[in-house]
Length: 180
Image 1 (cartoon, rainbow, N blue to C red):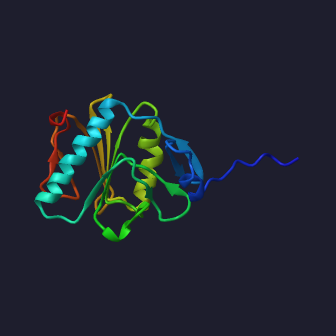
Image 2: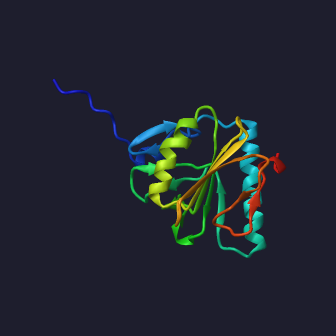
Image 3: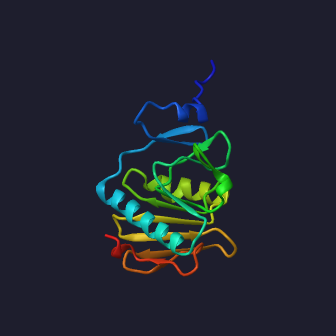
């Protein structure tokens, strides 16, 4: 007797989710997303605004998109994620649906329900897709884990009180405690 087959989901399933239901599609599996809490949203707002302000002050071409914003990570049919903050510097990756390909910088704000995904599954997917810089902001621990996936790969752990250097924007530092 054949074993039951687990369903493989596609972009069509992702784009046809019921109104108001958020999920991410990773390797053909849909992962439901819990609603964010107030601190999560405050961090998304303040970090996005800080990055946006820096880009504008330098007359930069990069764009900042807070969630919900769809990223077709490998520009294929199997991975659609909604990072908390996406920074895209290649305008050719942008479409009406979101971003096709890897953003230059992704920031995830950890919640109790997203810890495993942010620190393992997404870390691997972002690295292999070509994301240049990845930050995991953990409000529960007041810590930020940064990853540089370009050139000499690097990883550092910072507290919210530290000045975090932004790899893709020379001269930009962010102190999370100043934003709250």
